[in-house]
Every structure is written in C-alpha cells, then in structure tokens.
Length: 188
Image (tube, rainbow, N blue to C red; front, side, top):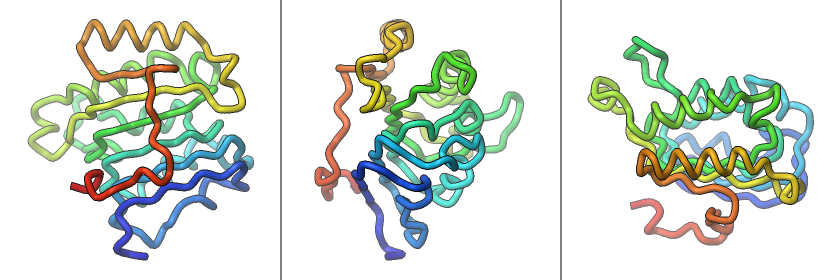
C-alpha cells in the first residue's frame, strides 16, 4: 500500500479517527473520510493534527467526521505570523470539512477565517517556500446534524467568498464526491 495516492472511506462509525487512515500510504494525495460517528480520540484537540502530519503531500482532504476538527487543527493549517515555517499540509488545494464545532467552545469563527485568509491567499515568501494556495473550501453540516446547521456560519462563509472572490462553498452549495468518484483526473 505504500504507492497508494488516493483513499476514500465511507462508514457509519469509527472507534477512532486513526481506524480509517491507511498509515502505510506515505505518498497519499487524496484522503476522504465520511463517518457520522467517531470515538473519543476525535475530540482530543491534537489527535487530528498528529494524524495529518503523517501525510505532508495531501492535496485534498475531506473530513466528514463529527467532532474531529478543533481550533488547534485549524490553527495548525495556517502559517504562524512572522514565521517562514510552512504550516500543516503545505500542498493542500481542496479542504472539505463537516463540523459541529464552529462557533462554540471547540472552535472560534475567527480561527477558521484566519486560516482561510492565510491559505487562500498565502504570503509571497511562503509561496516561494512551497506553500500552495488553497483553491476550494467546502463546509457542510454533519450528517447527523444537517437540520441544525448554524446559518450564521453559512452566511459568513458565503459573504467571505463574495467579498474576496474565493471558491468557498457552504451547506447546499457543496459537492462532496462519493468514495467511488476518485479517478485518474484527480491525481494529475
């Protein structure tokens, strides 16, 4: 499995986020996980970041998994101010998240906005070091909470997209590919 470049998993439950990850595939470029439920390690602030550090070449990340994205993980995706150190996943071009954490104690709205600004329009010095600009950001409600999505988050993301002319999609504007839609065109 070391040559695996794309991986998608759609299950109803994971005991932990790590259960759905093919760690042998160090060259992984596309990772899509969908699981409405995950065990307790998904709620630890650093677990997701630690796992993602194993795949520095990821170009597409789709996590439709309840509770796995925290403020810490979003902050790790953004470059630090006045630093020339590249953030987590420097080659990331597409990010799809489903989270119930935005706007509550797990993740502040400003952390998401700061990460989006830094990744959709990276500083020239970081681009020169290899930080690729994010092309697409999608935010969907968690499958189990689709009826409870925070429409303030959706409205804010849509306003940011219009104002900056960025490809940010929220709620029903999203198009999360199914697991079997990974093709050779995704890896070119």
